[in-house]
Length: 315
Image 1 (tube, helix red, strand yellow):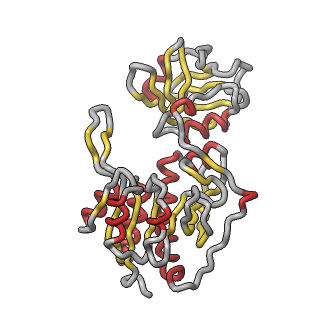
Image 2 (image 1 turned 180 degrees about the vertical axis):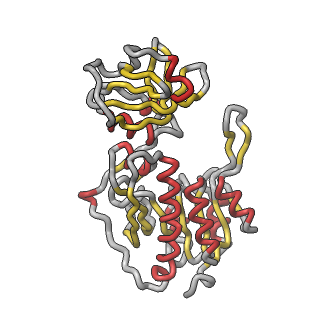
Image 3 (image 1 turned 60 degrees about the horizontal axis):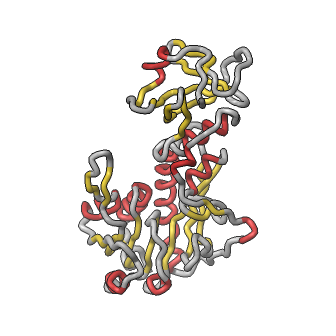
């Protein structure tokens, strides 16, 4: 079969999925329907907003289905009516029941944002950054009833820059994942790729990120804190405190340009001309953007002068 003959139902929700979908459409694959999670309230005003994948699908004139659950008879019948040859998922956000997995002629495949079997689960991109990985990637796998446990079809590696945040890395992975799908689908459907089982002994699991995961300790080394800031920038935000009030830190850099007199972890050692530098358990962190509780989100270049050397964060 060639790509125009393969009827695809695409399932995905956020920007990662939208980029993968767009890549498939640009390559002229036959996407007959798109499934995404329902529209949700966004922002302080809770404006009901469609997910990026829905927006892209409607732009392309592709029908969109947004069920609350994939476990209902309605969802099953809706997918089945398209008689798909293949279901492709990318950050859809819901597990598919076995009867849905069995609908397509060639099964269901998923573009997962890690090099499986490492980082199965809900937060592989965040965890790769949190753990200071130098490389991650995308794995296209055949789906089964487990959480990212299916046989692997293809992989691509993506390097991780030490200053990239989750959104930036997610976009790089989305582009790589879309290209990987384009280069995989026809060979997989035509039996030219033999899926490889995952090595369970090497598997790791990552769960959903919780609000409390953003709280960090200045006694950690500068790299650990920097990784937390960039991994959790979008949500829930890396958090410390000052005089009993919450402070969110949105952007940092590891400071390597000099040394300072010994100071307790969390102590401001420089606050001058946009430089807001804080001692850590090991090393120094340069804060580039932060937000005090009740205040605006500010670049350090605009507010570093408000702090004094000796000020202690984390108290």
